[in-house]
Length: 191
Picture 1 (cartoon, rainbow, N blue to C red):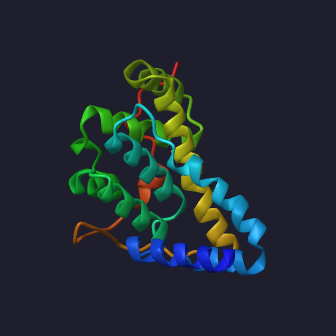
Picture 2: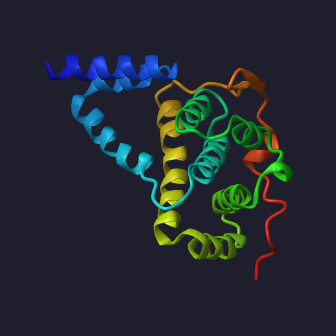
Picture 3: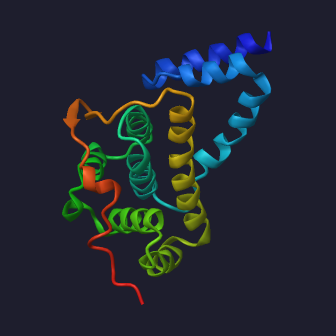
């Protein structure tokens, strides 16, 4: 009965977001306990406090693009749209048009890139985030980046990873900028 309920929830998630959850079904088939442990991480992936949705999703999308520019990226896009983030902001993060961000989104994206690159510039950006939104906002962005790496890693390890693809944002096809995943140019100089 419990497994049946989990399958129904997976089906509903797949319908809601148009996201293939076969890798989760494989985990469920292998070991229900493993799936339950994975589901505990959902709280980490969804934690967002004191940081605006557009900044949160810009950072999360930047992290996801660093790991996967396929279905996981499309899922984050769908979640951002569902939470009311502007399609224009999402598309600009995906295609790397940094000049078109407002200051808040730029800060989130630059922080995500610097953190992922282990760039010392992250220190200055971290301070700016805490000054602007507080320590819970920083934790929110840190968790978003960690979750953005976790799920694609699990998918690829289980054989469900997909090659990069175009991403659809509110009906518009957007090609991920390859350098978005590694570029740290435009970050403030580190001390």
